[in-house]
Amino acid sequence: SPDQADDPIVQRMEVKNDVRPKANHVFELLTNFRGRADDEIPTEPGLCLPRGYIRGKAREEERTKSRFLLASHEDVDFTIVTDSSLVERSSLLQRHRQIEAALSQIEGGRTVRKGKVALTGVDAEEWLLAGPRPTTEVDGHLFALEANALTADAQGPFIRLDMETANPLPDDRPLERASLTDAEALAVWDAISRTLRPRPNAF
Image 1 (cartoon, rainbow, N blue to C red):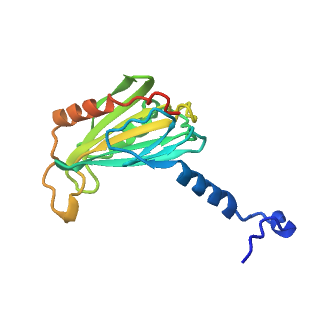
Image 2 (spheres, helix red, strand yellow):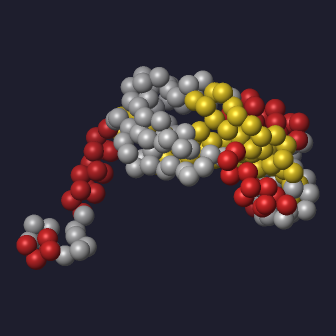
Image 3 (tube, rainbow, N blue to C red):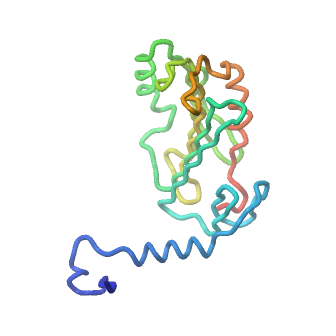
């Protein structure tokens, strides 16, 4: 059927046809998309994807989420989220009452480390927890880092990096223990989290 978005009756409806702007957005993404080698770091504003790149300035209400698995440690994963429109009421460390209350309900739950983190070009906070994981009931870790929680915008989006251990193994294989000790998990976390930084000319 023909597009009736300009019909006066349709214009008066609360729910309007948004096919046209969405289609324009898709075509814009396709126009600005190109392939990218794994080791290529673009020098212009845009969004990196696995083996791909979308050219363009950062925008409001832009959210990305990526998850990475360690091939040598199948119970370990990293998740990074960026969101240009998410502004929290409090920072990670300011939410200490909620975190400590939740932690007190977990037998064996404990804080490994918490505090402010000075990254290159970004001030962040981290809270690193350990204890039984709900999905496997095996002692593991949930390490979290947040930046720009109170001031997120297109030029400095909210950032959250999580590292989890003692996750379920592929093919439902039983997990007897986390593949990383506290010390090993901290070493991996520090090696990866401290490399977070805005890419020059990224926005």
